[in-house]
Amino acid sequence: MAIKSVLKMGEPLLLQQARLVEQFDTPQLHALIQDMRDTMTHLNGAGLAAPQIGVSLQVVIFGFEKNQRYPDADEVPFTILLNPQLTPLSEDMEEDWEGCLSVPGMRGIVPRFARLRYQGVDPYGNGIDRSVSGFHARVVQHECDHLQGILYPMRIRDFRQFGFTDVLFPGQQIIDD
Image (tube, rainbow, N blue to C red):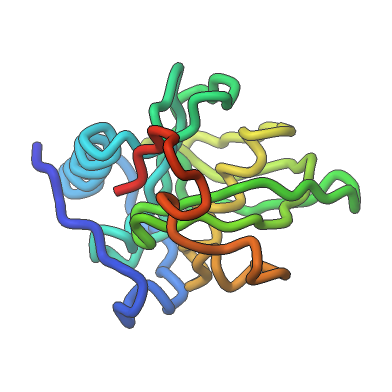
């Protein structure tokens, strides 16, 4: 369909809670998801939330086989998740580097639950219920944060581990915009 502009940190919509999707399997919903997929693919993203392209609905997409922005990450199956609910499966947290298409050129160390269960529905209203860990769990938490008006810098505990990618990782080819 179309590659959309990604809103950047500072845009008020990114700080708002997104609305629940109430109608499934509509042409408008399918067009939104295709626009999100085209945009995420074009920008080498690991995931994208509808608010990032200016649509205040609880829709996230994520997944990849290989990702230039996260070359060491394990494969994450492509998923379209609407109205998600996350449940940590333990109190164990992992800290790792994150970036965001809405915060281009920057990275930070973010704590996330190591294991979690996510539930929601697909574009047709069919249930999704998965338990995941590792990078898959990190991506889901990052994208679902967007639906609550949370950007990853808000979760950083130590701002000495937050900065511009080219300064933090000099000489490395990290795609981040």
